[in-house]
Structure formats: C-alpha cells, structure tokens
Length: 218
Image (cartoon, rainbow, N blue to C red; front, top):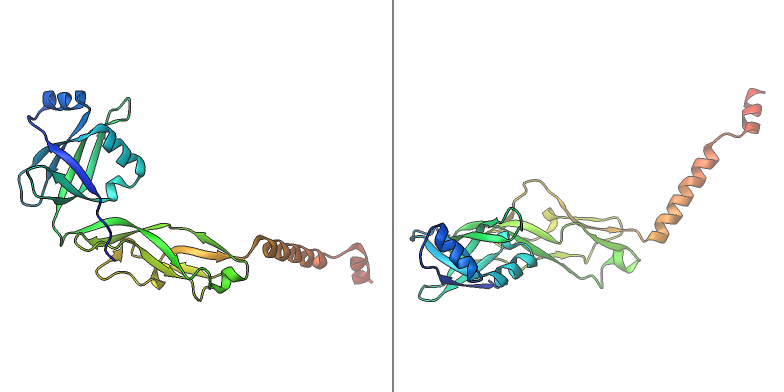
C-alpha cells in the first residue's frame, strides 16, 4: 500500500529580499522558496504555527509533502533546509524541493511487526526489543510505501531480525549497504537471572578450595 502524502498549505509571497521576508514574519508567517523540477522558483509563506507543529511532529526533513498553493498545481516537495534564529532557535525560512514522481529520495519508513500472537519466542515469554522503529530507504517519489513489515511467525528466543530478512517494496532499498538489525527477541528476565545464577555457581565450583590444594600437594 502506498503511503498517504500529507498536504502542506502555503500562499504565494509577494516581494523578495530581506525587507519582504521580515514583513512576512511580522504577519505571523515563515517565508520560503520552492525550487527545482524544471520550473521557476516560487516564493511562498507558511503560517508560523503550522510549521512549528510540523517540526514538532518530527522527521520534517525526511517527509514528502503535497504542496498546495492557490493558483498553482499541486506538487510533491521535500524540505531541503530550515533556517533558524540563532538566539531563539525558531524557524525563519525554509527551502522546498519539487519532485517528479520518478525521483528517487531517502525517506524514513515505519516498521510494523506481524504475527506477534503466534511468535514462538514471545509465546515462551521472550521480549521483543525494537532497535529500529523506522528504516531509511531509497524510494520513488510516486510510490512511497506506507510501512515495511517484519514477520515474527517463526522467530524464537535469541533470534535476531535483520533487514536482509525483510521483503521490501518494489523499487525500495536501504540507504545502508550492510545488513543491520531491526529487532531481536530476548529471553525473559527470569530466565536470564536463572542462567546468570547457574553460571556463577559453575564458576564457584571451578575455584579450588584450600582442601583441594592440600590434596593436590600430597
């Protein structure tokens, strides 16, 4: 299933330069520019509160948006930079890049786990430890997956679930060349405690006592 692309509403900004940008900020907006895609740059403004909310939600720089500007066709964009005030750390300007549907981009894709109820390791009391709740993939702008799925149907205690064992959507691939861990199933804490106690007892039994040393000398 293709991922739903969130809308980002903006208005055309009249005037350019520092003076016009300051006026935009006084009006409660953040100035920006849309560029690329074989079209002329388009000065825009986005309500300050809307941008703050988007930034607070996280992964703003790796999220694909459907930019809606009155009087212009909708276009898919990705943010390529947010300038901030050096003192207040608040956004003062943003750069948006237009994308074609065939453009390859890097995006964070959420990870979902399937068959947790029937997972052998979890049914025995194991604990699923998620190392990467999202995975950065190279995807096509026109076909962004909503998620990737990790199947736990045959995972047992001590098993490691790596990216190499996941069926990725067509046309998508990890940005990292090497194999990497997404999650693992650890033994329950009670079992770990029993194992540690047993190891300590074995170690203690292997330590020679004074009597052992005397008998060895005889």
